[in-house]
Length: 282
Ligand SMILES: Cc1ncc(COP(=O)(O)O)c(C=O)c1O
Image (cartoon, rainbow, N blue to C red; front, side, top):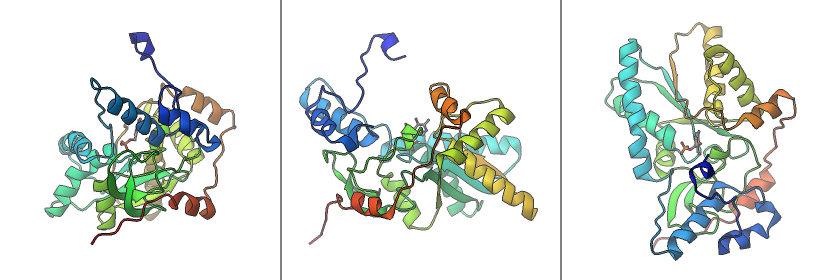
């Protein structure tokens, strides 16, 4: 679509940046990642005086901007005459989730509501549930400033699951901070469960979701089924942060029974963590 409008898209790691050429030599990097694409974009911006780079997720200003989602959701819930008992969203860099949940957290802190707040992530890239709260780089090559965040190590390359937007080694410092304060929970979900949930959602709601929000849909379904069993009154709010029309090959693979769940072993986790820099304060 971008090329239809006259731009040129380079698959990352690309051969048009020094960092892309270097990283492409390591076979681990061939599937690419958000971290590698960010390194390449930062290099282009740093070496061209007429070019700027705006990170699309992770940073405070992006989350703040996206809080319009939660502000609107509060008003929509009022119009529906209901109050969520649980808010569930998917986390890649944390922006759509922070955007949805932070205005509700404000209401919760003011004592007006008390929903559970749940972040969902892929088992292949579990930065909140298995990563550490450390200073780390936001990109693979280590060009960004260090940020205190949940991370799997900046040179970690997640398995090539279909939810490309969730294949990021780190997590927004604000979401990580909330998690450390115990103000929210996190759950990791394997992609086949996500796609099963996506099919159920499509057949119920008439919308084919992007692979990213299927993580939140899967957990919403888990929780709804639990509530059905216990008879507990539950109102679950989730954000459908993208449609799946660009991801139909993923649905094709799932419906043919060819989708697999990779195991992310402790050994690989420890290896990934070894790249995190040691930071000490005087
Ligand atoms: C549809 C969709 N949802 C979610 C994400 C994850 O980003 P974030 O966690 O910053 O919302 C992406 C990222 O590319 C995306 O494309």
